[in-house]
Image (spheres, rainbow, N blue to C red):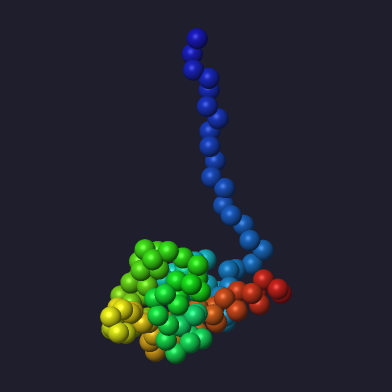
Length: 127
């Protein structure tokens, strides 16, 4: 017996009722809006948000607030530090080593931009 005949495939084009629009300006836009991917990750957003609400926080403060492990917090904090969004200071308090984090001006701008983008998305979906 021979192989069964395959049906030819057809490509479908996605149709929309209108053009894609930028959620902030309402202008026609590329379908992939720019989203701050570095901050968008849950734990990194938590770190930046906590630092925006506090002048500074220690590693243990952040760990407790975010209910995460040492390793997970360390990796995500390092990514934010490499991007220039947070600053890390290490010091000793008595004989105990401490690590303290602060949000930088660039980090605050990135967070404000991210929040603005999210607010615009929310407004767009409520229309």
